[in-house]
Image 1 (tube, rainbow, N blue to C red):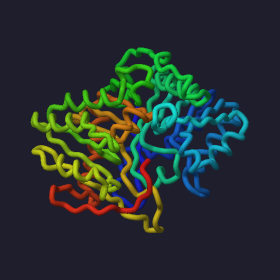
Image 2: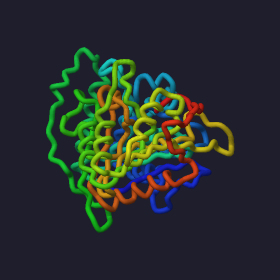
Image 3: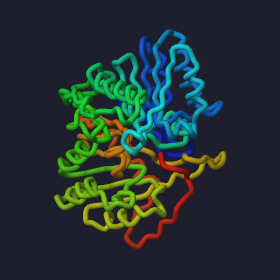
Image 4: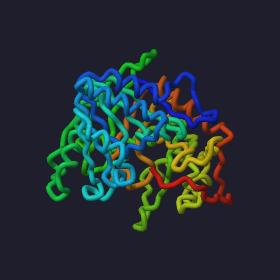
Length: 381
């Protein structure tokens, strides 16, 4: 098990002891022998960019008679159809589009793939050329058959959901219970104890592994420190009241004396979320900051130059990492996957990655009286 990162070129965020996404993806896909199951929000390639190598590795796997299955979100497919269509026309590759809007009023937002039913990659990285060189991303590579089997069940469920109409779906038919946590070697002095997590509630196999429940439990268990990072953070429920499950847990942690630091991307600048972030930052023991990644020296790149990571570290010993941002829709209507892990060595690495962003010149502390104007990035992912 290892932590994997992508960092924007031209920044100081790279960690020399943490392998880069491009290298790890090529290694994993390059040694696939039987099956490769990929579920992504979308696939966006550009000629000459790093994702081109990844897609070439997928085609090469198919040439080795590996059975490749790919699921993408139906709505985002309309924006990025080219690579999906090309892959779907290739021998041994089958693609499907899943309409989570019809299923749960959300989207398929998970970003993961499974190699030979024994190795998993999950994280914030989309199959997007920008995610490999112009966005700060974090993921987990986990080589364990028991863990991979849980993710395989989710993939097979979504493969089924992508071939039927929403009206024919019976959520009760997918119920299953898993034995967790799963012990996994980290290659260091301490093994990890890992629990897979999922959203949305109502469309997951084991309700005890629901992202929101696991995240709140992790925060409630913190005794000294909490470090949180998300692309977006909001207590608004899109016009229908407020969502405070995680916000309340963070406030309660601060009341217990836990020192809380949270990073949110500058994509929230100018949004209604700023008010809630200002309010949170005014509480004793809580510091909140925006990070703004400078534009690339080669010119403006839309939907990029941002910290897209989604993770929480408690007491430098336990963490959650996944694809959910901190908004209600990610837990109640949108497909997301992650993992919660008890491992001081891996949690310590994540805490160090967090502090590198926190101590960087890209950070801007949020204050109650601060003015935060919107910066053009494009739509959220």
